[in-house]
Image 1: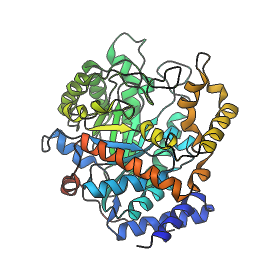
Image 2 (image 1 turned 30 degrees about the vertical axis):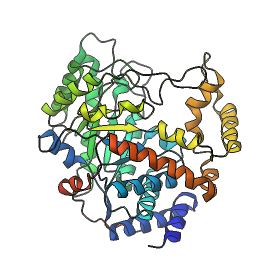
Image 3 (image 1 turned 60 degrees about the horizontal axis):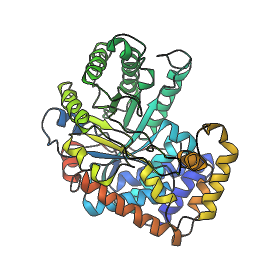
Length: 423
């Protein structure tokens, strides 16, 4: 395969004119199909695990690629090829699409280019993470136009090749209500409504993998009563087609970790017993298991606990961002420019009690979109050692989560049909 052509197509998909972006996306999609690389849904694998047809001792990593996405993707797929990993998700959240300036079609194009560049073949699972409804002025109710916005995002994402979507209406859980069922009511009602919408628009031959969420990440730990209330309500509301394949819960983590005044991270206690208990309950509802968020900055010794706790999936983002931004080869001058931009453009998001170190660490993810081209234009002398560092960390994660040599398992349960696209 012509690597220079792939590099050029990836660039064009991101920085070209609208027509050039679309042409690059279609070309990359069809090249991927030709070489046996196909966007796919992981739904069948998760449901098989829910039926007891698979072992419970592996956890699928879902990795958010925020910045230097082409290089990060290359490191990821290079490692996956080396370790024969098929149980792997790449994802982007609704909020990340905004601050990283990556619409769905662009993201899919770059992911496919990176996978092709490293000769990865088979199913590639691209996921919409935290397709979340923003809370309105009233507890338990979304902003007036949120439902339509998320439906539009879902449609655009599925059309682009996102065949895995995490519906997140956990922001609408209303803890002021007396009963747990009432607390979860808006959550399960709108989850079911959005799930029904997905089933109406998904492509022929594709059953999009759908996840729900019962507890907002960073909040109180989830309980069995909350899971049962949500799922019983969801079952009543959702009446047509395949339901959820997994459920996200809260076990004590925070997105990005808890930042101390000096910018370092506090130690976080994860309740793995909650993860395992609710994984077992989730399988009563034919789902694959529970999902852990906010995990990438946890201590290394935690990661082999996720398979032991029967988690079906773990979401990993900030730790990889840190590898890039804190790498000795990442230009200090560029990082300083990013921080100055945050000081100028995002200062209203700085909390009164935050130190400068806390503010920069917490908000630097929001500089990726503004400095996307600067990062893309970094020299190979800078980018290669960063890819090597990322690959080393990916290898560690794959080993700890027990997904090495999982390509065979994916091939057994996931068989995506070829789909041709035209400009």
